[in-house]
Length: 214
Image (cartoon, rainbow, N blue to C red; front, side, top):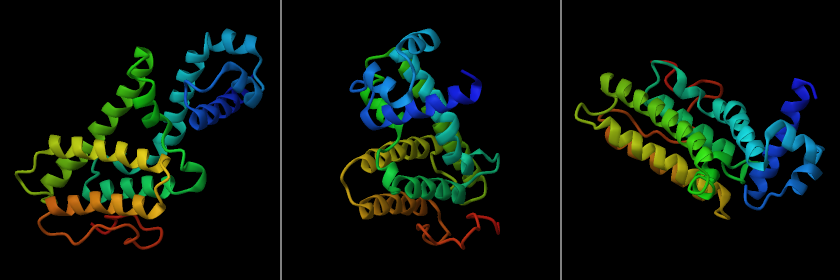
């Protein structure tokens, strides 16, 4: 297979794992949905676990990278954290995304049992925390957060909030619950901010990022 074909097959396998989870996905499920032959799975990836780890890396590069964009700017701050959570909310309430997040589901279902998978998940969570912490540091420097704010505590709280939101997205909870959850997180950010108004979903002009007029 050429490179494009490999990516297509990984996308198909990613969807199977996303829907069924690692433990409930068999090689036969993967063969039926991806068109891969059993020999190809073992030749190219070594095992079902090897294929799963490849799909996690593909998921991080294709799906998670888009969600993290608001936080990647070196000067990202409070408004960019709000954009990040709004972006997760918008993605999570799409009907096909009520599957939650493949990486977060893997964190609880597979990581405790497969060390190589745990390393992939931990690497992502470390990146997420680092980006959120940097945004908090920037926000504190700009006096968007109180000068005595513990940025490590806030970053840890926000990472936990990301995990909680994606777990809710995979549950039968109605979309309003997800919306209220995110607005609660944003209200917490407002509580650390001594001067700004409420940060709520949908309060930015269409096509205008939060903080564009800073």
